[in-house]
Amino acid sequence: MLNSLASGRRLALRIMLLQLAAAVLAGLAFLTLGGREAVSAAAGAAIVALGTALFSARFFSGIGGAGWALSRLLTGMILKWIVIVGGLVVILFHYKLPPLAAITGLVAAYAVYLLAFRFKG
Image 1: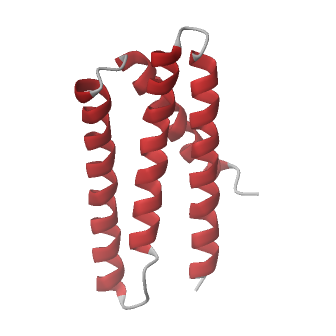
Image 2: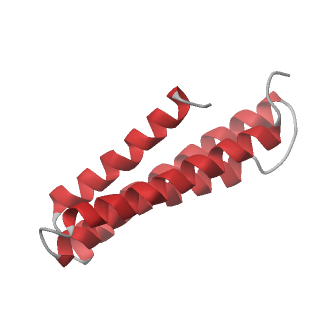
């Protein structure tokens, strides 16, 4: 085994915390345009962090064989995408927040996700 479950949990927690930091930064960056834009950007990034948290909680929920690991991976990904798409629907249609800010926050959180794997250090 190349990696332990504890190492994976620590990496998932670090990614989630970095995504929450990206949510704060996106909110602060859009604060110059107004409060609704700031909330929209922060919420867009926060739903990605919530999706990552649910995915990692499901994926690292136990030990088992390869079949169980694959099923936890797939159900975690499905949960993550339900949260992200559902969160965007709530942000854009229920609260009617600005879409550009929400999508910018979402992209910023995913950029953190990609960069965290690039610089695992």
